[in-house]
Image (cartoon, rainbow over all chains, first blue to last red):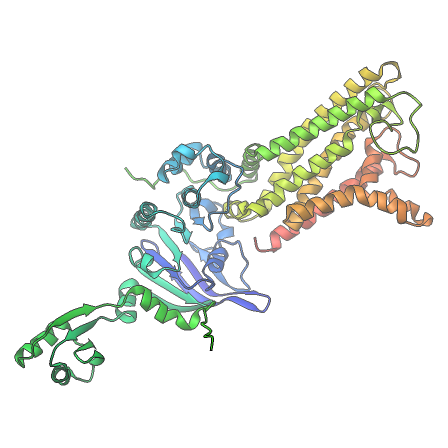
Length: 305
Length: 269
């Protein structure tokens, strides 16, 4: 369980995290989403006691992380793949971290096998690919078999097989009752893994919802209708809760009425239908719609006159 | 069979465990071991070289520093001290600032979120390793050097000799501790090394060139001069007594390490 209350972090006059409050519950994967620069990493660093909040609190299993006598058993984190000395071998990196909490060598070998680094464990980390670095970071997050697992952009640099592996790992951790907080700037990635979403932008909370709710609200389903007698059909299905958007003469999109109902009405009136398609905006679009006012670095197009 | 679970007694962080962790970190880096080897080679090698060039009473009193300039047989055999000091100091800087440069510090601080035990662990491991190897190296340099010098050589029972030989190891260790402190304070290898070399070596030369005569009393309190007062048999004219020198040098170490601890505790990682 992670509890963040009124968390604020300022660097000089720049506010990176601006009054965040949310709770990450055990047993599910919680996606932590936001555009680049939204304050995701800063928030995670404050949860782990690396950064000191300007005000507010962040607790892990009921206490500030640093107050736990057995921190590695409370939380494990992949913050960035570069939090590793390149001159050391993966094995010794993990061994040194394990030693701080009296975690035995056998567990080091175990996590090396879990992340699939067995063959390179004795090689210097400097020669690792980005994906191998991520795997090593995940191995260190799992060392203490912690209650809370925090992963900052874990799929960065991983090949499709690695991405799938991370997804399954997160699900398995959640199924074992662990608290899993995973950040991403890619909604599509989250849609496949997360059951709950915390969305932030410019350091502020935008949404704290279940994935199902988010999908229903942020990406409502619509129906694309194509008919040679579009105008007649248009009148037939108009109603107070129905919105229609004409695409061209014979095609329009309907929100607020399910596809079977539209088909039935058309059939009763003898209007031919050439297309009746359920359209769902991609979650990526929904996410971008939701965060468009909160994007830190917005690209601007400057037209040459 | 699960791939994730492990069921075993859960243990917490203790200072002794952090020392073990730092011990593993220390020996698992090639650069650490190499720097240590260089330091010892410099100390013994230059000491033996200087001893072979040493002729009693003929060295110019105010000549340039170097293997041929020693005025007594003990300092001839320990002529490599300055170079070894550079290497030990660099090693100290690498141990601490290297964690910041590579990002390793974040892994270390997530494992030990109370933070200070990591600094104490580094100091303990470095002190143990540097002092033991330092005493071994100064002993070899001294014994070997006196054997080369022969009849004019000093012996362990001569006044001040044991203090100077062991004191040299103390000074080498202290230089490394200064490096750890500066590394933690500045969090950057280049700036910490520059400050260390500047503070230990340049400062002394600059002070003797630039300070007006009536300020002469200040020079003896500079880190290198204070350390030298403790680590030589025949200190120069304006030097502190050996034990006062040790106290002053130790004071610098404590102050710098204290500042590093303060910053580690206060600042974001």
